[in-house]
Image (cartoon, rainbow, N blue to C red):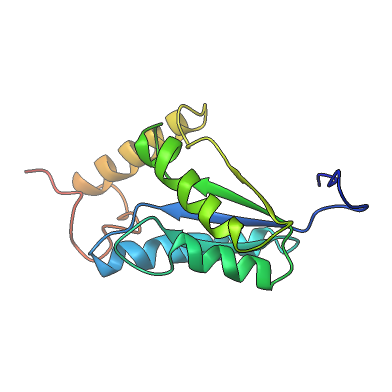
Length: 153
């Protein structure tokens, strides 16, 4: 935990995991389920899901929830693979606007997920799982369990 230079004691840290947002309802459900499972692994943190656009909860809403839960440092973790305008322009601007309503609350936007060394392991696992399923040698992944995707065409 980081110490605040203007106040004694550690920050109460919150993490907002931000995806792009989608008109497809299942995309929001998957993101929120992921964030819920990540929250369960980090009971010491305030953890909220947010979507950059199109659906709620927005960054504004998630930031306010974090502050209401006692956060003094809100870390926004973009659930994006690569740097781009959303990472270096849009998310920081929305975070700054949300923080402006909460004097004394600091914020940080982390780097996107890639290029992280573990992404290669994730691709390896996904390819192996889906190939096995599509060729009849394995169970479907969580996304294809309903019969969609993972089909040789």
